[in-house]
Length: 421
Ligand code: NAD
Image (cartoon, rainbow, N blue to C red; front, top):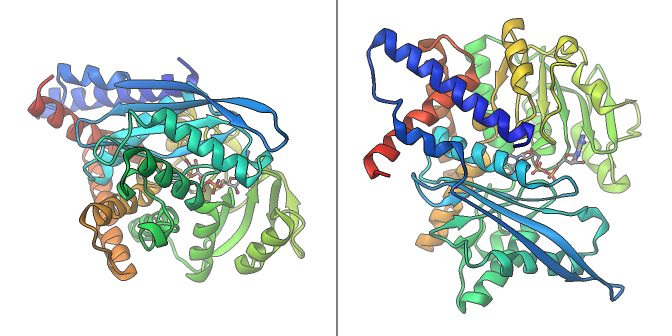
């Protein structure tokens, strides 16, 4: 097991111990049972080679993965990542988190994840299309609208989801829009899906800001990662009147203590390919961004960036995890002791999968919602989840991550018991 997946299981075991201690003291609610053992391993792990004809006539073979972690509460659901560091253990961890996330968000899906080990930036559009169609052909037997539904993740986007849906529909001989979410709206995507992860994170933050009694006017925010999750969150927070003091992407970051004009940063990134060298701001490294004197830190890139080594230097009082798994378990415990509120990924970024669920519902019913309905339902669903995490945090006298895991384990445990092994 890699550290990542091992950490997932350690977090799971630790949460079970907390539930057990609580039940021993207050009477059993039947959450801890033998069926929970099932959640310590993925149900199915698929690995395949994807041969792709490159533009120069050569042939390259890429490694592809799909981990179907658990489907006791509904079909497997989880994104597809294209990144040079994708490996089986990472995909297993991401699939585990999806299982927890769907239960916390209370949507009737299980958890899965997929990935291809590839530097997508080095591929042309036709090469990316052939790679995506190759992945679909390899995975087609295992996925489907009622079995496993992928979605975008790091370096995958609506165009890739469109190729995905098209290839799967060709294999099946009929239109199958519900096989994948995050599609362009022209072919069955949902209004609001493109910004849903950030929008959901923003709703969670606004809910908690009131509970934590944080004043909006003086709140400075630093966002690591300027893609779908990070850029859209920075835009929403900027529009709402927060000060976005720093942002970054894979090439580095920028810092302006008085706040950045995010619309101008977006234009600068469109023109130059990066946020770096934005006029009027100081260039910083991604590591420096984590330790700036800000109130809120929003990791929105990759996992494992907040570790026991850098927690001591973090000055933010709130960490809103839009990325999956940005904080190591040890770092999370240290931050809790320091009084930092870590809003866990399984809640903070669940807006993406909630609106993916809405997209799937619209595809199945072939009836499409207005944006206002999508946003209203997202707000309702994610606020309910946030309130419940807050309530469990107080009941169990623990941090928000453990509270979210308790909620998920309770729901999964009941479903496992009712269905039977
Ligand atoms: P994306 O590809 O749209 O953007 C990723 C951003 O991170 C880019 O700006 C990239 O330059 C930056 N980046 C890459 N490596 C970096 C590094 N080493 N340091 C700093 N920045 C780096 O991806 P995304 O969809 O925004 O996903 C970001 C995170 O959010 C991931 O952890 C993903 O799993 C999580 N997430 C995404 C969604 C979604 O709907 N897209 C949903 C839930 C969670």
